[in-house]
Image (cartoon, rainbow, N blue to C red; front, side):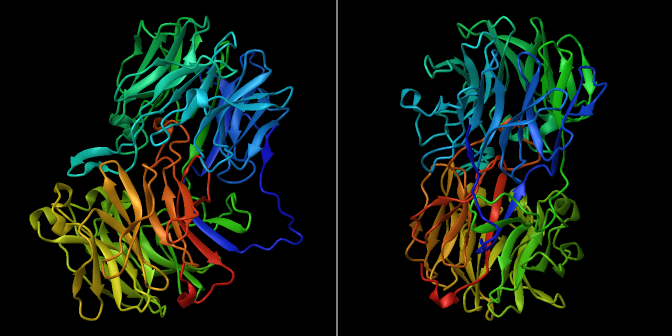
Length: 640
């Protein structure tokens, strides 16, 4: 059985420093088992850590599940007796292992893994022989190779009752695409949606075939009928896979529970067509199907025979006899600042941070937006996350709407230190979907918080003054005389290039220079001032990381994955850290909660785009990286 966590000898091992990242994921997750009517609920494990995605074995003797028992963010797979005894680790590596299911004869497990001999952490279906320890990849083979430039993940395996087949969902060969309203350059929402179809394959990797598909829809979480003749799954529009994991829209979105004949893929039957997001369908008997409804006031467990348990749970799975159900309960308590996370790079100590962390040139302070742990104000801390100091309280301003701040759509975003450490500049206003409606201003404040001033003009209502702009996401030049930032206006989504792109502000004269007129965002000056890194929407479905000279020449596009590559920042040594979607979804998109882009790995590359390397590999949305090294070279020597 695979075990591949980084080894380290604490007696002589010295870390190079701290690596800060933000994570959007539940704060706690614990497994429970109960009677099918919700009574007699009890914790499954006596020593829970962070577990989820449980299911019963076909003989009802085991429960398999995913756990992060080796570190926050690192998912491995386990099994345990239904009474909570005999806990066994099945596969544990630094890759994602998830969605494990036992075969009917109890001799094998199928599971999802992102393990790869090359740098390609896509989700694939694997099989493990429990007797011999042999493992093999079913879906990443030449026989069933898909278009590597498109989505290509495989999820939620399910054994047929006779053990001859494994059904699963996949977004293979589907286009990367966002969500929302149409703009002059694709959909307005950059976060990807997912189009799934249902497939089956034999455990030896042969006879791969498609069972069910519907263009523009997501067909997920297939399960077999007891006689093995039918497969049931949920079905929703591709756009609904975004709504399904967003708190503001989940209650108004819809899906259906559908079954088809396994042999032919025909005889399509809508088993449940009522309103609401219905997922995790499973045959409880030959003629009864259980499923989960999430969102709204009637969340809980349902059956097609009229059963209903009003409970806020996730990922339910019923026992083979239909008498028990196992599930997780999650909370969204935010990780404390500086919480230790799993370290994929053993040379660095991974720690949790709030958003937009920025290390001062003096290397002793970190500024950040306190979004998850506060009200989107600007604070500073020591590099150890201690002595939190409020620099600017956005709720004391007249520029932001407190209701939008509460939704995470407004606030004081992306602090940037002046080189002498005396000032912190930031954007104050409305962001994301609200950026074309409401104002955004550049501010700067003294680091002790005693004084602040506005640097650019805007207006509270952009639709009433269509020439005004929303300015945000600034970065100081290396000499402290300029700020680069992004501009947006009421007409930007229609293609008005006078309201698009990057601008450079001379802080002393307040003169503004137009640097670009494209769909650009999140600019940062390099440590030595010779380059600006930023994110550009390069096609209707894709964002890339780019660099440009401060005078507007020398544009270079550094990424080309076809997925979203964005949120780039400079590391202390002149390399570029960024978030990527190039490895695709690690799980079915619609099954996530409370997140934006339900995946995202952090990468590092040289300033010219070479030597790309993944620094995370989790099920969750990881972003906002920042190295806090123990020893830092002078900025003038960082020439990469």
